[in-house]
Amino acid sequence: MVVQIRGLSKVYTSGPARVTAVDGIDLEVAQGEIFGLLGPNGAGKTTTISMCTTRALPSGGDITISGIDVVRQPSKARANLGVVPQYNTLDRSLTIFENLYYHCRYFGFSGSRARERSRELLAQFLLLERERAYPSELSGGLQQRVQIARAIAHRPSVLFLDEPSAGLDPQSRIAMWDAVRALRSEGITVVLTTHYMEEADVLCDRVAVVDKGKVLALDTPQQLKKTLGAATVVELRLRDVEAAGQLLPLLDALSEVDSAERTAQGVRIFAKETEGLLAKVVLAAEPFGVRDLSIQEPSLETVFIRLTGRELRD
Image (cartoon, rainbow, N blue to C red; front, top):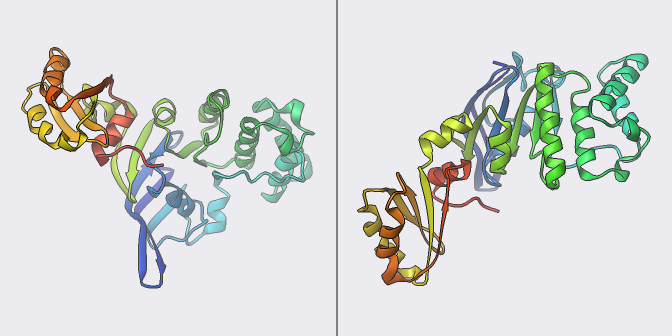
């Protein structure tokens, strides 16, 4: 395994207060895999990435990248990993070519090798026409492509992407996904964090659902949806929201219903099958005033809701 994490924890202290950001995470990522940490803001994803990339020290546990302990040998570990953080770290005083060139020089490339590698990356990421441009002259999507190009310039074995599509428009997000997929042909392992369900579903070979610093589930997106999702999810909005608790046992008694739970606007129903379901649900909910009813197929969001019992947090 290229990435191995054992019993990883991070506790922040401020006087008597203690906040556990990461709580005993165990993970393994294989070579060439695109692996996702999926969860809401504050789940512990970024803290985990920060410890893996030597930007934060663990409170406990072990992390190895390509067999290198990142705590005991941080400099050696950094030579084997690339990082694209949430925020833009391009040097605004340098051109796109210079951002790549000086990154290569920092990692020990000769001048000629650095120029060759920089032009190779410009071509790979379709940036040749913008090599003399400055970061401020590029769109957010192009800047993100430059950041990914720079992060892999020294040919790391693992690339860490922290919320890579945050703030990107749909077209730029799709272009970024294509760029990440292409890294597989170079043998680069990718570990990314995201709270976008679609991104994890489309891009990742495997996903770990994380919340409150713990791994709640880990598998392929398809298997997670199969084992943890219901056949159908029904969102029921009621006029009498306060009385929704009285509706739950009526819904649980239906043979088609796997489980039901209260929401801020009514009830969420996880159903095993849909045939004849809606008529029974509407009939049971009629005394409480049905305002709206919607149906959705199982998704990673369904999985997340079933694991945590709530919607994603802002």
